[in-house]
Image 1 (cartoon, rainbow, N blue to C red):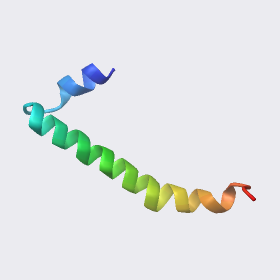
Image 2 (cartoon, helix red, strand yellow):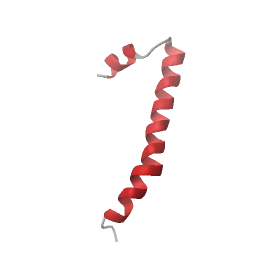
Image 3 (cartoon, rainbow, N blue to C red):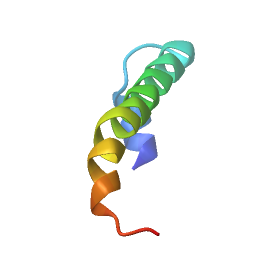
Image 4 (cartoon, rainbow, N blue to C red):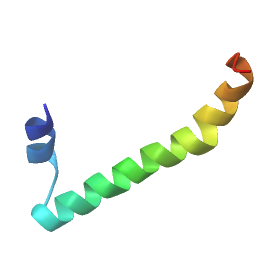
Amino acid sequence: MYRFLWRRLPGGTALRLAVVLLLTGGAVAALWYVVFPWLAPRVPIG
C-alpha cells in the first residue's frame, strides 16, 4: 500500500518526502487540536 501511495505522489524523492512530511504534520495537527480536545471529555479516565 505504501509503495502505491509513494508512486502516486508527484516529483522526485525530495519533493515526495516533503509532501509526506507536510501531510503527516497536518494529520498530527488535526488530531492534536480538533479530535483530542473533542474526545477528552468523553473518555472515562480517572
